[in-house]
Image (cartoon, rainbow, N blue to C red; front, side):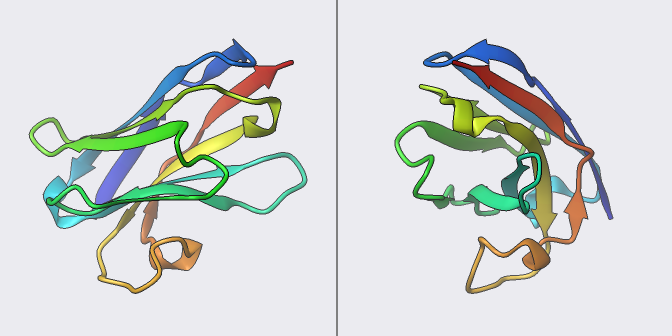
Length: 125
């Protein structure tokens, strides 16, 4: 089992940047593939980005491709999400998630086994 705690959210103007971090504790961090999801008010939680266990393979939602960057540091048990060129539509609670299984579709919520509590990102226009 792994525990996940996100940090780094906040209020930023459109065009600005933020860096979200997710600290993991428990089982060996490198055992998990990691993902970031987000949920805006009144909307379903959606996939943002994912990164593989050790070889750095990344996947992004089309809406954030070229603006967001996911990375991980297995020595520090952290996964990060760099958010650049933020837009008001990026406003949401951002969640970190960990996945034990190897799956074909890394964008599915149900593929992930553990979730953090979320961190709020608000982008003003």
